[in-house]
Amino acid sequence: MKQIRLARFVIATVAALMLAAPMARSEMTLVMVEEQGCMWCARWNAEIAPIYPRTPEGRAAPLLRMDIKARPPEGLEFAAGLHFTPTFVLMVDGQEHGRIEGYPGEDFFWGLLGKMIDGARGAGAEG
Image (cartoon, rainbow, N blue to C red; front, side, top):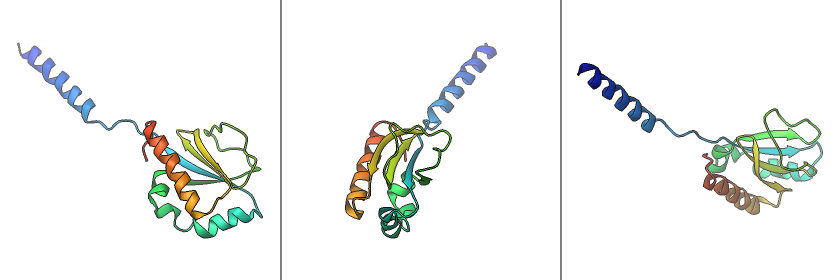
């Protein structure tokens, strides 16, 4: 009788812990593909870079910079080639979820990035 109670207690405890455990979160990263001498990269750096880490978007998808001539970082898989700078690629668990090619200006950048992040969250990514 005590063994049955103990077994029920253990099962109930394990079940409660599993339900209380946070769900696995997907990791979002914004990869900025840039190159030396890119005037649009310089404009993004002047207008957005200083505030990006402090924005909701920057907290949801931290920035990772990559030179267009460099090999992609280990663990990142791009859906297509990288040909333009700047290119902003939203990665979810190392897989491309969306991209912005070029820098369309501050207002358009935030709107486009927000739509990509919302779409990733709708697909199960957290940020």
